[in-house]
Length: 366
Image (cartoon, rainbow, N blue to C red; front, side, top):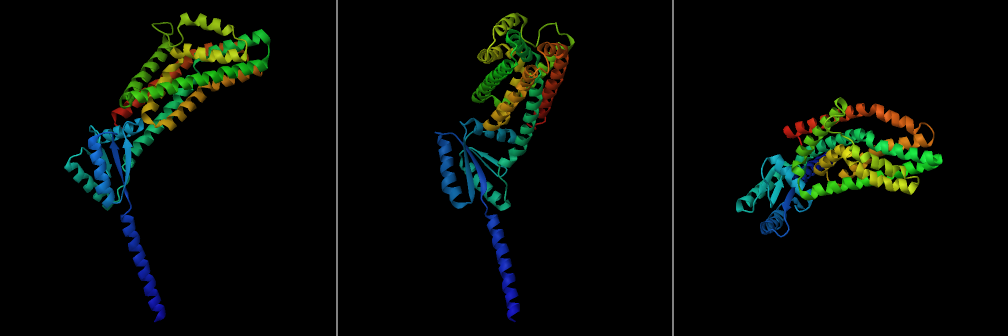
């Protein structure tokens, strides 16, 4: 009898625990996103309602987003795109419901949505945009790797580096100095391009044109692709996708006067500006995409990755020439022979990026 009573008590304890756990699970707080502007009277009324009514009587986690912060404004625009409607502050997202305005009907809708979210155990509203964000990260990473690869073999920058290394070799025959000068030139190019890229990135973020940037960079990518294909088929017609011929004597004159490591470092900054018409196309496309698709830290990380890929051939050429594995004449000959193929590959990749972005925008996936 004692053993039977023990089993009964144990089973009763298990059932009570299960029901208690279910009741606890049903009371897990739900996320409520609140978008507001500092100093906005309707937003202040919303804030009071959420604090005095919703927070006090329901298990909710209120996440506040001040829309003057670019990242918060971008998140709100994603919800506007998701619901295909104009959204203004104050705005609240609960479960799969978006409520705007500070009328009594809005307050009733918020309370009803909170009850429904608690009843069904609705996931955070952030999960509604997470899939799109993951797709944008994938698209951005693919574009960064592709554009950086074609930009890395760009014939313009390599031509200047080869000219610089040849000048130092002719003057002193010191291969250790060649390596130091080549790496100094590479470092200054990396720094200048990274600074210019970050400047453009933050400029786009500040202007608030991110919602339209995908269309713009899609068109730009297609134009760059067509321009490079033109260089493959008709290299001497209409325009050139390289440094203007009128600039080239000046670049050669400046470069030939450099024989020291500090001079090589300085010339990297100067030449980076001269080379912008030749090398900036894929870079601008990538910066435009990153300014819309990612938050600040991941975007800057991808900019750094792009530039590290961009300078990789500089390092290879410098070490190859410095250790006697090749010569500047051989590298220059190879550059001239492969220029058309490089333009062809660049054109096809940029066309693919542009067409892919247009398709994703048209289908509403980004």
